[in-house]
Structures are given as structure tokens and as C-alpha cells.
Length: 357
Picture 1 (cartoon, rainbow, N blue to C red):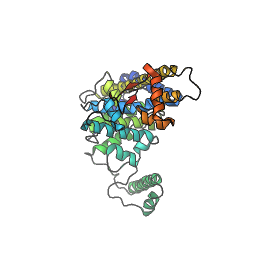
Picture 2 (picture 1 turned 90 degrees about the horizontal axis):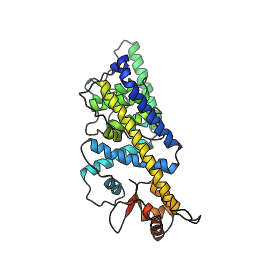
Picture 3 (picture 1 turned 120 degrees about the horizontal axis):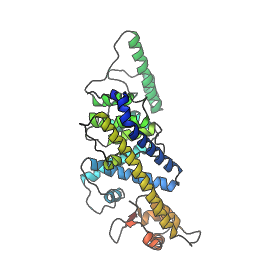
Picture 4 (picture 1 turned 180 degrees about the horizontal axis):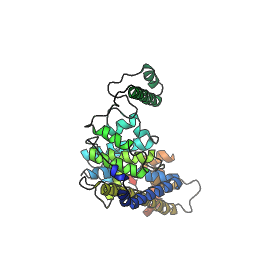
């Protein structure tokens, strides 16, 4: 299975991609800078909600609908409806995304990260089929797995160079291996701009389908690539959200440059939507803080406001634990917020939850 993107390097292709590439890059960098400069509670709240929005959008792209409230309540074990299979898949997508976001930049393309994205199998730096493990490498893997990956990569490079000097042909991955083909695409984009490399990686994922029934990992891989290339230092882009809300629709029948232009538009849409949510959180916080005017310095009401902003869902019990107050005190503060209080998500009189989602 072959994925050829050499046409991207032609001048005519560049002319068609220059404008969308610049727009996507500017939007992404602008959002990342806003998140880096925002108050921590606002930035954390925007990132937490982006995980939820992106998981919901990933299911939507597969033709399944999951209500955002159901996803939030299921996470808190407060379901108001019987969980569905689609909801379970959304939870899995959410877990994958949070794991990538919590890992260091570049982790996604290490051995464990590769297993997360493309499933079990050899990842970057892993021994090729038929290679025997070096006892030194095996021993190194026990104290430090990261160094073991580097040692395996160096050992494989030495063996490849030795074979080359001896006149042996360089080993090539099987032509029908979509995972190997997708890896070759990523390797071939290292000299391209980060955003362009990410959309090529995403387009190749959609074409080659290296992880069947795990389509949501394609946008996650492209987002991780942007983070690894230092294009999104303050967040993990929500590319599934951008794909769902983009004006362009990806289709394999389109020419390569048209597909890439559409994916660039999706990156721009993702940044725009996350920026809009950041604005929404800032406004909600400002409105709630007005209710704190004139309170005593020891009042915990401002802390409750920040709890609403920083986390998608708040219950009386969770607020009491976070603020070290009694549940009755939380009920009193909720009443003091009045109409500025976030929406109640459970629509019931007991075991209620509120959230800005």
C-alpha cells in the first residue's frame, strides 16, 4: 500500500496550499499563546472541555451521537440514562486523548505511544522482525525503558550500516503493511512545516487506515505531531472537533491538495472553536464573580466560581471536598450565586450536578 505525497513539493501545489496553511498556522499559534497567557483556571478549564468536545466530535464523525451531558455525568458515575455502546466508545476516546495530553511532547511516537496510536506491534526504535535482542539492551530496559528504546534504535542502525557496507540490500517494510506505510509518510515529512506535516499525516491515516476501528486515533496522532513539533505547546489540538465543524468535507476521491486544504481548514476551525470556548469561560467567570462583590475576605464563593470554571462538572460533595467546607455551606453558596449559577445537568432534586458544558 503506497501513499505518495511528492506532488506537495511541486510549485503548483504550494500555490494552492499557501493561504490555508498560513491561516491554520496563525490560528493555532494564536490559540496556543492565549492559553499560555491565560489565568491557569481558565486555561485548565478550556483544555478539560476540549477533551470532552473532541471525544464527542470523534463519535459524531463515525455516525454516532453522544450527548455531552451524558459523557460528563457518566465520568462522575451520575448517569441519568442507561449508558450506550456509543457512550462507552466516547469514554475510550476521552481516555486516549487525556493520556496523550498528559504525556511529554513526542511521547506519542515512542514505543508505548506508538502502541496507543497504532495498536500492538513494533514502534519507532523497536527491533525489526528477525532481530535478536542484545543482552545489554535487555538489561537496560529494566532500569530505564526510554534509554532501552534509544539503545535498540542505535543497535539497529549499526546493523543496517554493517549490512550496507557488506553489500546487503537495506530491509524494507512489507508493501501491504499500512502501519509501516504510515510511518514512512511521517518520516518523509520531517523537512516540511509542522502544520503541513500534521495534515499529511492525518490524510495518510484516513487513506491507509493503519488502525481499523480506531479511526479517532488519526486526529489524535496529527495533534500529537503538532505538539511534538512545538506548534502547540500549551494544548493538544482538538482536530476531531475541527473536522466535524469545518466547512470542507474530506473525501478520498478529491485530489491530494484539495484534501490537505480541507484538513488545514479543520485545524483553523479547531483553534477558532477552542478560542470561542475560552471566551465563554472567561465571560461566565466574570458574571459569577460579580455575585462575590461585597463578600468577606474569608468567603469561599470565589473559589467555588473557579471550581466551576476549572472543571466541567461540580457536585455538592465534590465542592465540599475541594473547598474543605460542609455540604450545607456549598448549598448556601450555590443559592448566593443565584441566576449566575451554571446550568444544572441532572434535572433532578437529589444528587444534582452543575457544569459549564
